[in-house]
Length: 85
Image (cartoon, rainbow, N blue to C red):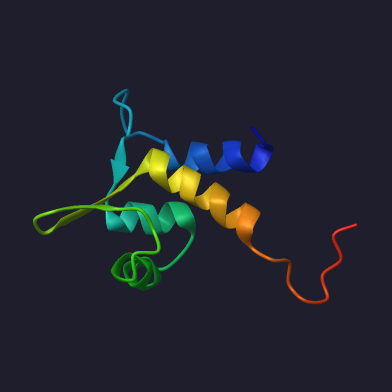
């Protein structure tokens, strides 16, 4: 696992107790992903980010977010003018 992935997992898996964190609430997920709650909500509404909806509750499974983020990194085309040498 790369250092970046370990950093992401440590942010997403920081439990407040010894109980492992299986899912994040929207505010926690937005903070862990370093995006605004509005951006997270837009992604959720468009089905772009993995989430679970139970009634009025929305949760973001930590394992799914980690995989989704890794996929985003590997599938994004490099920006124009950026040299990766």
